[in-house]
Length: 324
Ligand code: 3HC
Image (cartoon, rainbow, N blue to C red; front, side, top):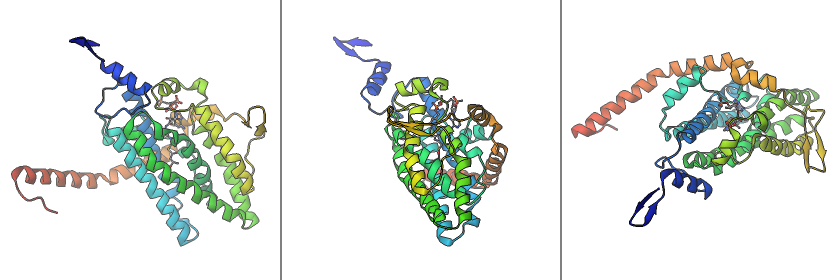
C-alpha cells in the first residue's frame, strides 16, 4: 500500500482481494495472481478441449440417425459443442495463452479433457443418454460457472448453459420416445443407462477430500460449489427423471435419505477414474488420434487464413484497398 498526501492507495493485491470479496468480476486488464491465472488457464482449456473431443462420440452417429429429424437435432447439438469449444478457447486467450498452444498440449497429452468422453457410444440409445445424463451433469457443473469470478469465463457460460438445456431436453425426449417403443428399444435404453451412469458421476471430479484444487478455486470464486455438492445435486435431479422414464439407475445403494433430505448413493470406481484421467481411458488413443488428424488436415485452412490476414494488413498499412 502506498501513501500519497495522506491518501492510501490500495495495492494491486488488495484490489484483487477486495474484488473477489465483493463478489465482483476480474477482467483481463486487471492484475491477478499468477496462480489465479494458471488455474483459470488449466480449467478453461480443459473445458474447451472437452467440448471439442466430446463431438466425437456423438458425431459417429450422425450418419446413422434413424430419421431426418433426429439427424438434424444431432447435427445441431454437435455444432453447438464446437461453438462452446470456440467460446472457451477465446476466453482462455484473454489470459494470454494461444489456442494453437493449447491444442498442441491436448494432442501431446499435457492437458486433459473430461473423463466422460473416454467412453464409447455403442448404441443409438447412447445419443439420448449422453444428452440426458452427460449434458445434464454438464448443466449442474456449468450453471454455477456463470457466476465465476473471471468475467470472460462467466459470460461464455451464459450462452453455453442455454444451449446445454436444449441438449439435455433433446436427449430425454429421444429416450422417452424409445421407452414408448418396443421391448428391444426399452432394453437398449436401460443397457445404455447402465454404461453411462457411473462415468457421469465421475464428471464432477474426485471426492472433495481428493481434490487438490477445490479449496483454492472456491476461495477465488472460480468454483461456487465443491465436486461432491454438485454430484449430489445431479443425483437428486436425475432420480425422478429416471423414474419418469421407467429406467433403473445401476446403483444398489441409491435411496432417499429423509434425514439428509437427499439421496444416498454408492461410490464411483475412483481407481477407474484415476486411470481414465491419466490417459488410460477406453477410447483415449482413438480420441487423441482423431483430434490430431483433424488438426493436421485443417493446417491448410489455418495457413490460408493467416496469409490472407497478412495481405489485408499489408494493404491496410500501405493504404491499399482491402479486398472483400
Ligand atoms: N475429467 C478429467 N480430469 C478431471 C476430471 C474429469 N471429469 N475431474 C477432475 N479432473 C482432474 C482435474 O483437472 C485435476 O487435474 P489437474 O490439476 O492436473 O488439472 C485433478 O483431476 C483433480 O481434480 P480437482 O477437482 O482438484 O480439479 P478442478 O478443481 O479443476 O475440478 C472440474 C475439476 C470439476 C472438472 C473443474 O475443472 C470444472 O468444473 N471444469 C469446467 C467444467 C468442465 O470441464 N465440464 C466437463 C466437460 S464439458 C462438457 O461436459 C460438455 C458438454 O457439452 C457435455
